[in-house]
Amino acid sequence: MVTASGSAQAPAATPFQPAAPQRKRVLLAAPRGYCAGVDRAVLAVEKALEQYGAPVYVRKQIVHNKHVVQTLEERGAVFVEENEEVPEGSIVIFSAHGVAPEVHEQARTRRLRTIDATCPLVTKVHKEAVRFADEGYDILLIGHEGHEEVVGTTGEAPEHIKLVDGPEGVADVEVRDPSRVAWLSQTTLSVDETEQTVAKLRERFPLLIDPPSDDICYATQNRQVAVKRIAPEADLVIVVGSANSSNSVRLVEVALEAGAKAAYLVDRAEEVDPAWLEGVSTVGVTSGASVPEELVTGLLAALAERGYTDVEEVRSAQEKLLFALPHELRRNLKDD
Ligand code: SF4
Image (cartoon, rainbow, N blue to C red; front, side):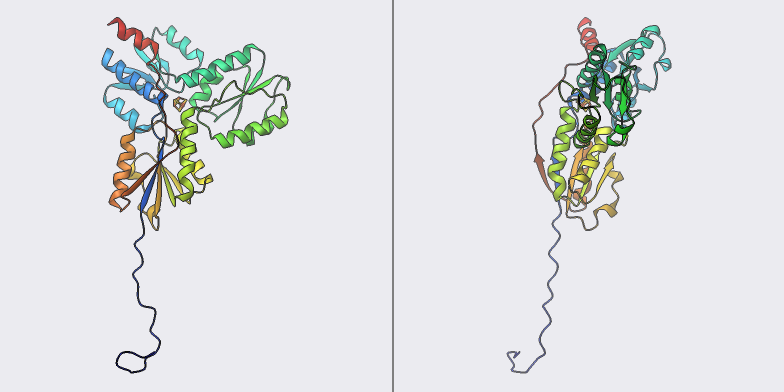
């Protein structure tokens, strides 16, 4: 090589080029956050507090979200585990996850004034259970053992319902008559895993009857479809939601199955470990059906401070469903 001065030189090293700055962006799944059942349940507690004043008792967490529960507690809601903790004659609200008939019966015995905030889509599953049981079927309820919704649905027909906790639970199921078997499911399961469970059940019980319509609710399905859209491009998916929220936990699993390199569940932005973001270019963000949008906004602000200012919303469905307030509250509101 000859330079302009004519002196010979050794071949030059590749000129130094600064690494292109890493493009940091956020893919924000939509729909995310509050579903119609959660919106109605939270509003029911707020309206009851307005209408009757504090304290208003709520049996179990009204929805599975720490922040929502704390906010309502600050406004005068008192969360209890069982009816026995509620003073006789007081108002008690039943949570969105539904209750067994015996819980209504206990409330009557204690002269409690009840407001039932069970999501109408959970009530639909209860009615299916009652109908199948009345027709003499054994019901294979796909769901997570101990989850409040499963406990409530099982209470509708305890003699007829057998819990199937995922594909691994299929082999152990015993029924009275294999020709009279139906399946139902919890509303917040993974759609894909439930399909696998049903396929295995059908291998064992070829005459298995399906529910009249999907038990996994529209909100659970839409949030799983939405996270599947963003996960393949994401180095990291952060799901905002509480650890006891079934649909939120499922979103983490679905994100990983759909190709996210990593996925974590956080209640709020402060729980994000900075180490998760090392070398991460694209962060996917979504939230469970019991999560208020302000928690997602907080997470986006925290990510922006770390350079993730480019936010693109990826929408896979529009949701317009709204449920009316529980009828007890509508009636009482009108009476005033
Ligand atoms: Fe109802 Fe589905 Fe929301 Fe549960 S997640 S409260 S079933 S709409």
